[in-house]
Length: 155
Image 1 (tube, rainbow, N blue to C red):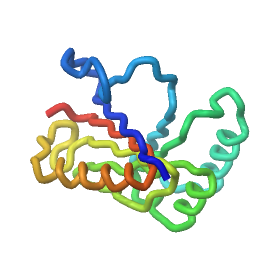
Image 2: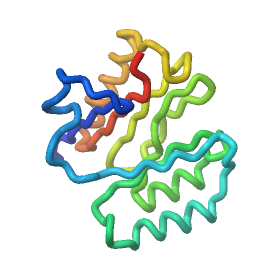
Image 3: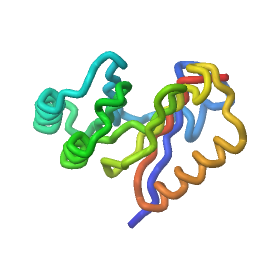
């Protein structure tokens, strides 16, 4: 099993000192599609199954990985996790002040999204929080998983 790759981005800010390397790498094709479901959108297993069937059978974006960020707790269940695993779609690991999702891994890659653990879009992450994330990322990379990390919070 080889090492995975890490990709890190932020919410649209373009910092000149991040111009090369892991931040905003150049020459990459789109490789991940994130579906964000709003907090008012409650679980619907049949709709998710139909969407995943469509996504896995289409040929235009056949190389694009799929991740889902469920912002309603009703989506957190074994039936949904199994469906995501069957289609190799990632459950987005995200932090919100009222909802934190950290498991289970459902795909051969990880999508980690940071919104703000205490204050949405403006929490400052402590060294301890970042160190915990870094440890998890290193573990996933050593398991051969690619890891996508997105900070939607530039505080």
